[in-house]
Amino acid sequence: MDVRLFPSSRRPGVGLKPRREAQRPLLPQHARHCPVLEAGSALGFLVYPPLEANESFHIAYEGEGRYRFVYYLRNPNFGRWDAIFTITIALPVGGYGVSKEEVTFEPGMPTTPTDVALHLMRRFVAVEDLGTPAGSVTLRGAWNFRTPSGWDTVYAPIFNVIERPIAPMLVIRVETDWFAHESEFRYVLQPGEGMSGEQSMPIGQVFFVPREQVTLSECSEEEVAAIRLSQAEFAHKKAAQKVTTPYGLPYSPHYSRMSRKQRQAPGHSDEEPSPVTEPESGSAESGLTTGVQVHGTATDVPSGFSVRAVGRNEPCPCGSGKKYRKCHGEADGSK
Image (cartoon, rainbow, N blue to C red; front, side, top):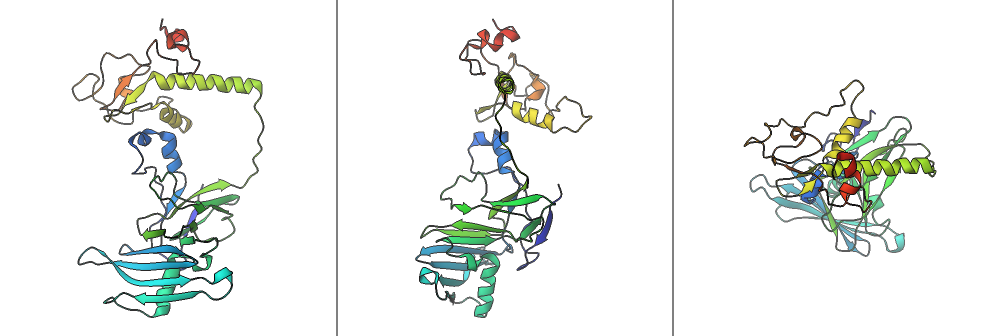
């Protein structure tokens, strides 16, 4: 599917282009070997603010309809962020009346006309959306999306971010095949909370969905039976070959391998190539545990990892409650 990009109308050409990223640096180590978690993180594309590398901002909600926006520039001599000006925004009580915007320039910093400072703030923040609902802050993106006919864009917070605090966001879905929507992400802050923006710091995530009706219907008994059998077979194959990372965390690469096979183009071999070049099994460089019988070959296991087969007296991974040798182990000759 071809999605077209067009720049922000308020600051065209400034800011990083959207990109896909599967890694989240603060996730626990085991999450880095979870293909479904990484696939969730990589869904769609990260969106960045329209900032130059030497610019940043911070906006905070002070409560009672008051916001505080600070614009920073990086000092090239000291490498620090210097505040250039602050804008205090006071919304009318009850939603009626005129908003007040007061610009204050920091001592010793270059000044610009007040209207220029207000215009610059509006390149990053949709001021007209402040306070709906209370504490809301709408951040603007540097790039926008035009989807093919019948496809919508969903604007969401960054997936799988676990650091605290995390501000809730109002997720929207826009028919971007005909409506020229500019990327916006509306977060809702509590009094005392704030959000910062830098060029390399994403402000949200987008993904694309087809505009079609979805009908839910129950599976037949035959379909349920086939699903249960598939679950048991998958669990058996997953547990039959486990890999332990150099940090001592076990995981199974079975899902990743099956996923890659599903995505293979017609005419490709069903044999899955090893993701890395492996030294000979049992060599000093291989790092593989020798003398272990597994369902597969040593070349399927990355260097520096060990493999463990399911014990004959361990619970069967299919979830039946029986020992492996009394369940699926019978088919493998485990007595």
